[in-house]
Figure 1: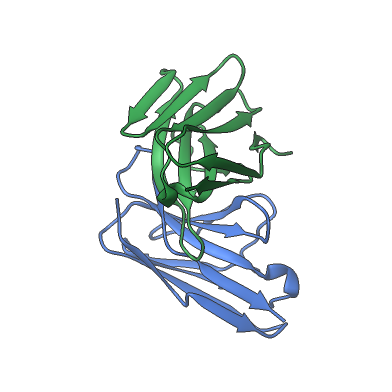
Figure 2: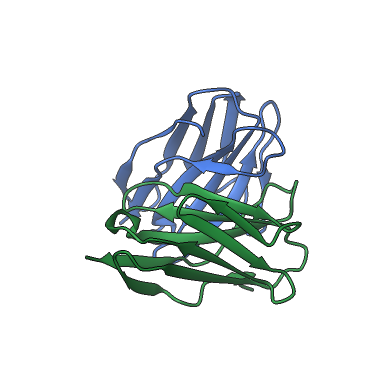
Length: 112
Length: 115
């Protein structure tokens, strides 16, 4: 049972444009959500998170939006830069339970 | 964040052997975790490494196959025992730097290939 789904395995965006990565979850008990970026041969790097009491969290070029009723979150990167090319994972958690449940990842490619 | 190192970074092993992976953190942390990423798959939690007590394993993972040690607050090991080709994965440790912040930071991973 895949509780966290990233339905787009890959996404290609032109440099300077907005990248939008999507994630859906099924477990209504999840109340904390995170995005990680992963380069080849490296571990995932924490990007940004959001608690279920919010619907938006912003950090520089990165903004995460949470729609609890739709059980959907998205990561917006604007403007996109070549260094943003990586695999992006969303992860969900029941706060305090430590266990992260990951999506399958979306490979983002930023084209010059 | 935290600086996390893992050894080895990669290894190729023969079926039936065991490999111990080390995870070292640059500061004391309460929670350490071990994840597996099989080829083309997402990350899956294997177990939580508890300091001073036995690890807590997720469904589908057992101590005989993945024994874990946590001798202190900066170090943990994961052993992959009696390996088969299905164990070929990237193994990652992660830490929760500050208790109850729920943000985990990951090591670089160990890429294991079993022939």
